[in-house]
Length: 86
Image (cartoon, rainbow, N blue to C red; front, side, top):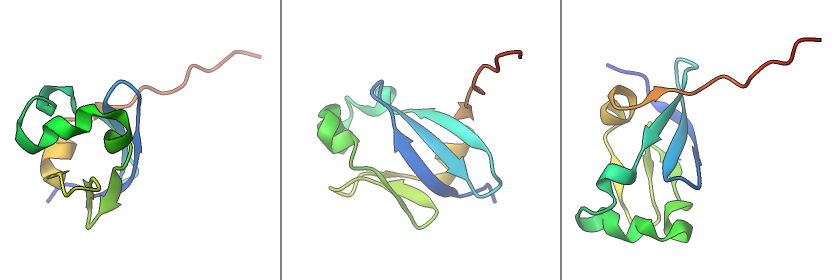
């Protein structure tokens, strides 16, 4: 079983910054799904931004969701912020 989502932050470029139960922070790109069925309404930024963690995964206000395994397997490690040398 893969880690589960503990928090989610939507980004303006239709990616989600996900924190998983193992502490990993990963980015999931929703853009490939935005032209498919129920996901079309997420093209509206307000709808997209309504995403919340739900039972180890995520869910939007109108019920759109992804399998937590899909979120983990199809996401990539989030870039670490650049550190400035002192």
